[in-house]
Image (cartoon, rainbow, N blue to C red):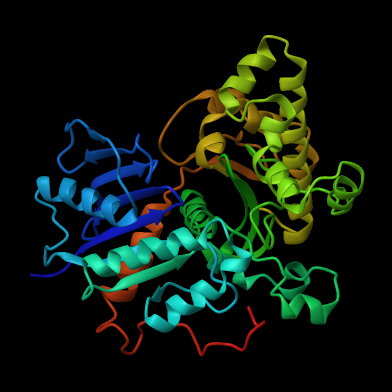
Length: 423
């Protein structure tokens, strides 16, 4: 029997998201979320999707660790006749947040690859450890099955050095792998391709500004299918205003807070990553609630919304300059796909750049890729729902499902392990 299914795992520090896809038609067979792992209030929600109409199933109660979480997910899949012991399962694809400079493509996970992912923990301390845990758990469950890492950073490795380098001492930067890596790469890759498709053109012909606006938010400039600039940097903190992250901030703010406020490095880390952004400005990080407060005349919510939009406009303008010619600006992810006022405000006033939003088209809700710009606009403005799980499944299956034996020609392994500091 031909193996044609891919299980996609996204392992967080206390959660596991999963989807099982049939790659013959790229349809979803099931999906689920295990959250609050290690707590007494752990929760698993499993949704059978094959055939449609099935109600989600929920489990509550302590799930001790990621191994128990994945085993519970496997039990739910087996109850739908989709057990992980099936010969139809071709591979497991893992989202890995940070791949440094070595991993520029999906990569079959070997002991050497896993060691390299571990070596990158210092530049992704919140994400890579959880990704590694998910990989090891899946390997223990199906040791003979190909496991593939798909890296958030990979799409951005095409940035030129002028965009990737920080203007700090080169020796110090190289010794400690300090450079701009970018994140949300699977989303930016998928959405930029789908935007070209929406325009009826090949990706190689199109220049796109992608705005991935969720609780985490990032922008990218994509020229002919290749990323040439992105807003996140060494970590996911740089760039746009986010739900709880500050985005761009003067680095001297950290020195000032240490000297004047007596805050520790850890205190400042928590402040900038978890107590800033929208929640820092107005106490809410849900754009729906912020808009409700804005409409009710709340000044702090209005300020938060205005700061958020101002940063978006800055990046749209900057990336227009970087690209020289822009064919489309596209909004995606939770806020980008659903918050019409954000889209309208971000594009308002950019008519001289050829950008405009049609109020009627912008107000319509749809789960399909769509244009929201008027016919006369020189630059298309679009909404394209992202699908990071499908992107991971596509990349995984392209590597192990169609390219022959794992590790053979075309298997997509990364190159030789670089010396310390090369990532």
